[in-house]
Image 1 (cartoon, rainbow, N blue to C red):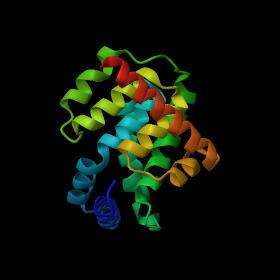
Image 2: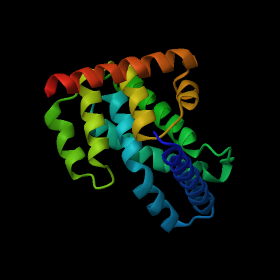
Image 3: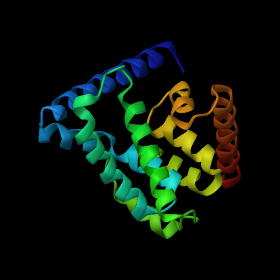
Amino acid sequence: MKGSEVAQRKLNTWQETNRIDDYLARIAKNDRKALSELYQMISAPIYSFALSILKNTHDAEDVLQDVFIAIVSSASNYQTYKKPMAWVMTITRNLSLMKIRDSKKDSDIAQDDWEPYLASNENMTSQDRLIIQECLQNLSNEERQIVVLHAVAGLKHREIAKSLSLPLPTVLSKYCRAMKKLKNHLMEEE
């Protein structure tokens, strides 16, 4: 990646972080338009992460809605540390784990179950869809979560380590291993 591309990516991430922080501040003041705009902006990575944990589209949709309910109820207590997506993904992870504990579900996801959602979600790019499909099919649960959090949600490895309660070197090695699996799989497809 060239220096200008890296600088542009950092600028985009910074702008996105500021927009999310602004939405959260407005949500704390009961601004429903901000909630709608935030939903449009981050619902796809939230859903993808929940789906990577739950492996069930209906449960992931429930968690997606629960996350936004939690955002509305907690927005007034949110303290910006310039990491709003880490905060949102921590909520997503906690609600997903609670859903698993409550329902004792841990079954594989059927391809017919998640493909229609990915195809119809206009907030996802074709690259996001490809990453999610490959993750769901070829990676372990932990690898899937790490790749989705990094590639789709845009979290840094350090934030992922904190969110998943894993050491940073473990997250880095699992991410590298997962990317190699995906690369090998894609090369075999060609």
